[in-house]
Length: 265
Image (cartoon, rainbow, N blue to C red):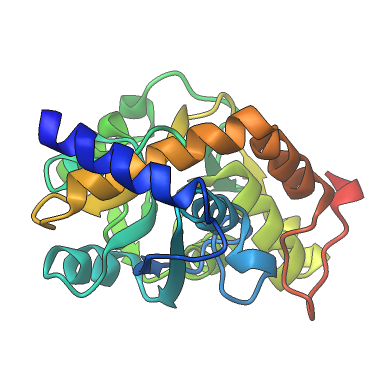
């Protein structure tokens, strides 16, 4: 541990004097999860903007490659990527990855078909009789992950957009998704008629923290984790995290050819 602290101190003393000169470039796997991550958006999306800026503060540049979530995890564990952007905190992910300090806090919700005879819910067992869609490889939250693994009424999709399509068609009746992502995709990729076919149940499934994932078997994993956390702390001290969150709420992070009116939220 003392050796790691010494190495970090040496690196940080160098980059603090010359931030313009990066000493390393990382390749990070990312997914299409707008407006948080998308290579079609400004700065590759909100979360990726934070990750890039945090690493830049410690002299590291970042390149992103887009892939599906389950493939991103597998490829990172095999050494193809240095990290994955991004994941919610779950015990399942922490078995194979180091999780950074929290990047942001978001809300996980159930979207439902309008025909579902519920407006709110109290326990997951209450939803056991309904068909639920999930995205391949997503862990969501510890409680929901355990429920999904025990359920016989779940259908797996490759993406959130595919899950929302199935929800609109009433092929499934429930679909867990980040609250802002659900709103954004419905506004960007679906019609007003489609949006009328779905509703959001209350309360939230949970409020989750988001994290950079660094594979544990990476020989530099603990060093990269410590450096990223240091850069993230620097951004917070500079007020940049609050600034980026404001940009998110104002609609800065979105597809340039498919603008969404954030004033509708």
